[in-house]
Image (cartoon, rainbow, N blue to C red; front, side, top):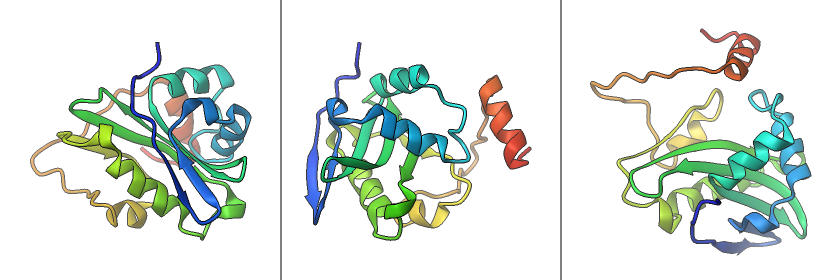
Length: 158
C-alpha cells in the first residue's frame, strides 16, 4: 500500500515541483542519491519501498528530474525530512530552498508536533525554514542499522 497523501504540483520558471509518485524517474532518483555521502549504498528495491511509504518531492526541468526529497510521516503528528538532493548541474539556482519551502508548506504536513531532519552540511538552508538545533530538555537517540554504520564510518562521525 502507498501512503495516501495529496499530490501537489507547482511551477517556478522552467522548473516544476511535483509530489506525484508516478512522475518520479527511479533511475534519476537513484543516480541523485548514490552521488551523495549518505545514499551511496541504496538499492533500487530499497528506494522503491521508501518512496511508497513517504511523501516524495521531485523537481523537474522539462521532463528531466533534477531534484528529490521525501518526508517519512504518519500524516498526523510527525515527519522526518530526508534525502534532499539537487543535481550538481542545477545547484546554486535556489531549487533546494524552493523544495524545502514547499515541503514545510505541504498541506499534509501541517499541525505536526515535530518535523525533524539530520544534516551534515545544510544547516543554513534548513535554518531559513525554521529548523533549529535547540532540543530543550529532550535527548535525541537513535538505533542504527548496519547500512547506517557504514555511512557513519565513511563520514568519520561517532
